[in-house]
Length: 151
Image (cartoon, rainbow, N blue to C red; front, side, top):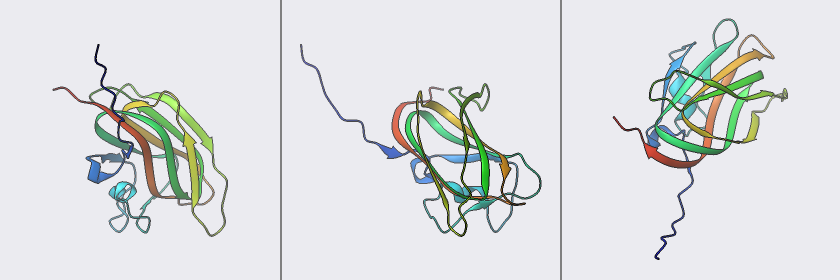
C-alpha cells in the first residue's frame, strides 16, 4: 500500500492576494476602506465611524482551516469573531470572544490560537472600543486551504 505524504502549505489565508475579500463592513471612510484590512500593508487600515457595534466579514472563497489569528488594531475593547462554513454568508456561529488590552500609542497585536477553525467566512464584531473610533490594520489567519467551494 502506497501512502502519499505531503505537507500542506500554511499561508496567510486572509490576504487579498490569496483571493480573500471583505464583503461587508458597517463603516466606510474613503481614505480608510475595509479592503485595507487584508492588503498585507501594516501602514493602511480600516476605521470605524459612528456607534458600536461595528463589523466586517471576510470571505475566503474556499474552505479553510485556521490555526492562528493575528489582529492588529487600535482602541478595540471587546472583539467577537464568528465563523460560517456555508457557501453564502449565513449561519454564523459564535467562535471567539476577546477583551483586548488598551495599548497607549502602539498597535494592539492580538494573537489567538484557533480551535475548530474550519470556515468559509469570518465575521468580526467590534462590540466596544476604548475611544469613539477604532481601527483595524490587519487580520491574518494562518492555516491551510481544505477545498474549493463547489458550485
